[in-house]
Length: 158
Image 1: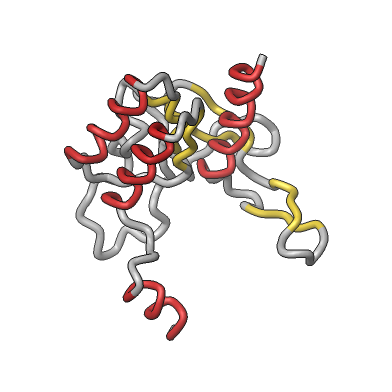
Image 2 (image 1 turned 120 degrees about the horizontal axis):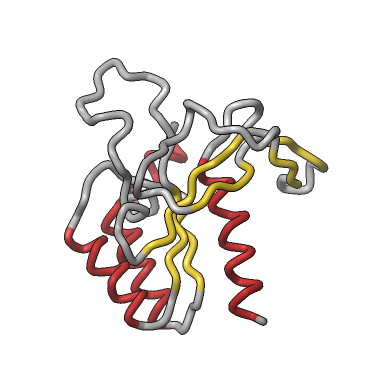
């Protein structure tokens, strides 16, 4: 707990304004593909401006469409409402499918979603611990966003 609290005091936790600043910074550094593997139910002007800035700079923001919150208790937002920055028209919105390529109720769907990619049973390495599997049987859009961003980067490189 102290580690997380210390990071928060140092301003190193996830926040939508920090994400917006990161998008702008990446675009200003010449990035052509910017990955945002997180999402927010809140449409903030600075996040929208950041995505618009990236697009105007020639960058593609590849963004997670969002996961359906597992715990709906104490939540006020619509669990299936579009998430940001994926819902902005300048972003490429990514949802996830399960290991069989089928849709899942654990991730968001809708008109704002443009592409789906694998998001469960993702094999990876983790800090030298060897092979690990992330996301188990429930797909998550963060992993799918990584796949799509990798493909986008290959297209840009070609």
